[in-house]
Length: 107
Length: 115
Image (cartoon, rainbow over all chains, first blue to last red; front, side, top):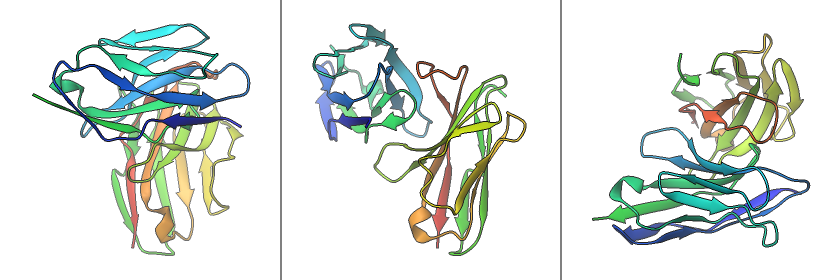
């Protein structure tokens, strides 16, 4: 069946540090992969997506590459800011979500 | 409105009561999804509509849960004889197409507390 396994949190980083949040998936067929973000007090919103193998999604300095050979879609950012503090969810199509990773960036 | 709207934002129900949760999707969006989100967890899929047709209800946890979207726009999630384990945030999302690669736009959710 289909599922998403996401790196457990919480994660605390200093400003300008490098961020990686791991996400792996199990899927039949050729799903699309998403990262959603939930800022404090707000609803989930799309951060980036990739619809086929080797695609790279990017937005707001975040990137993730759809790796079919390792069934992964890891989220990365080279230099995090305090405003990136949020909960991040990896998702497969619109049906399967990871458990979320809470990120806190301290000045 | 500009986004997905859910009401009420908060609902307290006594165990055994029936509740109805409403979702107004973005106008023109074909697909509508319901999720249940427990504290500290990710959204768990409940059911999915394409226009008025309920194409997948495999995530509904029991026959006490029922969802409808009779005119292909507003949707209602009904929970009968609520139990404490039903306490969660219920999220609604809509997307433009019926395919899996479309962005889902989420509402703020309804926080249900069963006492």
